[in-house]
Length: 244
Image 1 (cartoon, rainbow, N blue to C red):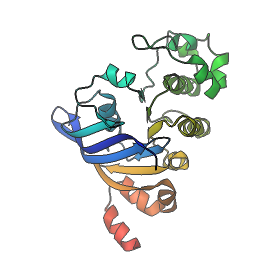
Image 2 (cartoon, helix red, strand yellow):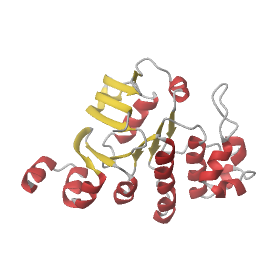
Image 3 (tube, rainbow, N blue to C red):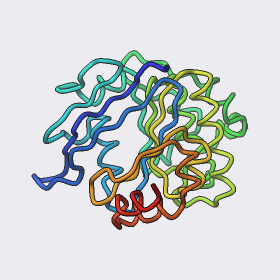
Image 4 (cartoon, rainbow, N blue to C red):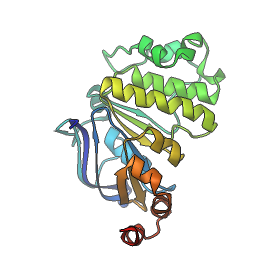
């Protein structure tokens, strides 16, 4: 059994004392890709922000490789091996591709060549400014920069946002391959459900901030009615009981 990279225990979190995520527990193992699914506003992005330290939890724990992250700063979490690719990609339009790999935390050296191995197209674009890249190329850069950190835990927020499905179909297998070869755990927030479940090992579904369904990705793909009922906040438990 793979060692646990991330463990979230009874997490409640939100903004200005209003809870967005309530009593959430989930885990990610070494080399495992886990999809976090749900409609807009379900609490998926908030969950990733809590893990990376941007949002402080109201209750519960976030544990990385057995270490409780309470009181750990954003930069310290990054040094511990958490790489977060946010919804807006976190890029600098005035910098070239190569210059992005020179930006690291104090004393950190990013493995530029590792990014180019996973995304060969980036090597040909290394002298091009980010603002001149296509949306797909920018997303490759964002993910490649995260992989250049050799993360222990990779957080991906809406990788497909604004991209054609064909481009996403090229990106997600790279994430799957990286997890397998490196042992990195991946928590993937993705709006394209079926694409996410194609590369994921397991999936969790949030509805209105609460966990309503979890299962192996294969099982979720095979029970589309239950998945969609959970996704849109209907009574998944009733559907599940009817199927048993």
